[in-house]
Image (cartoon, rainbow, N blue to C red; front, side, top):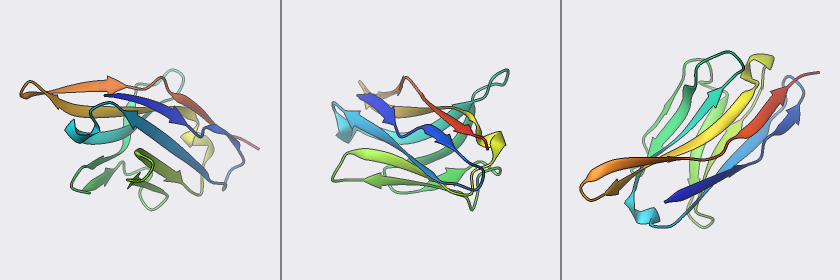
Amino acid sequence: VQVVESGGGLVQPGGSLRLSCLASGLIYTINTVGWYRQAPGKERELVADITTGGTADYADSVKDRFTISRDYAKNTWDLQMNNLKPEDTAVYYCKVDYWRSGGLLDYWGQGTQVTVSS
């Protein structure tokens, strides 16, 4: 399984962006898809993730502003980000956990930059 992110960019505070994580390969083996972010000088952190069963979890800092969802037709896992704040500025990464030979492996995308600034 491989993933590629898209949708990053520059947005003003209070604005919205939608990130997409396009998956390819043995998609049916995917267990969980997560969006992570890493700001300069900070550790990478989990923003939101969703299981194939549809259970989603969010970091407290993005609850009620971000929504993670799956588009079955496009094979993407999207992150809708509303009411963006300057502190949301970071490189956003998609990570998939997938089953292989009885165990879970993971694959990270290359990341997409999100900048929130006026």
